[in-house]
Length: 303
Image (cartoon, rainbow, N blue to C red; front, side):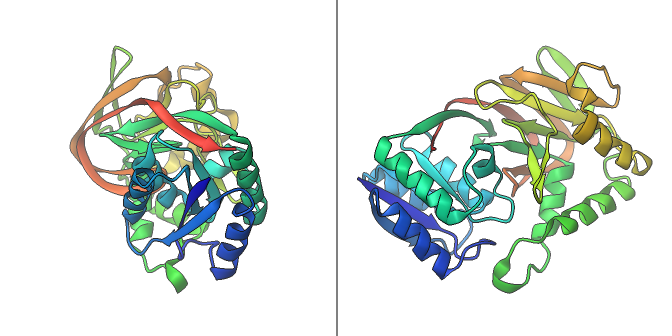
């Protein structure tokens, strides 16, 4: 058996020693070839080439952004293995992989040897696959602003506090206080300020704390859509309480401030002006029109 190991050497938890340890564990089950990324979107090309070259699996030692690139390069052609090399590493956590990279590598080696994998439905926004979430508007704007900052040593991802600060700045200046996106979903039309499509819960994490923006989302069904109609500065703490703690919006409470759709196959949206977009926490540009839908071919993940 042959597996391609794609390493992002500037991911938050990756260094030469970590790479050597991961490779040593994986080599108990397969012949491993290592390639390292040097630029944005290269991982998709490397993964696609790995499939063409006949590798039996593609394993990623990196963060969520690089893992998303590999998902888009591989699709469901071969199983994907995820090693939690990023600061958050949402998808490895959601799949139940150990937080320790050596322990996760041992788990993936066992999965390779046993042929153990899980098929997961994923989403697409304008053709770009996402494993756990995609957003148009506020969350994508936060990602863009943080990514545009000076990151520091080895281009490391900024900590959670920086994301929180940028989000508060945007809400404070009223950037998402009015609905500017028209959403067509499940035979309904609504106007919202921003939108997040969630493929499985948790949506993200702050440190060890899971953020269940869409607690009813599952990897085996359709998408859950969370779309606040407006968000004022005075509402920010209450909004955080509603969507992350009591979750009334997902329990059919009819909260007029938040539109919520559960287990749907497709959403069409039209923005009044180009809006920022993110997939799996990676900024991918601005959109005016978007189709968010389930990719039923999905992906295969080693477990």
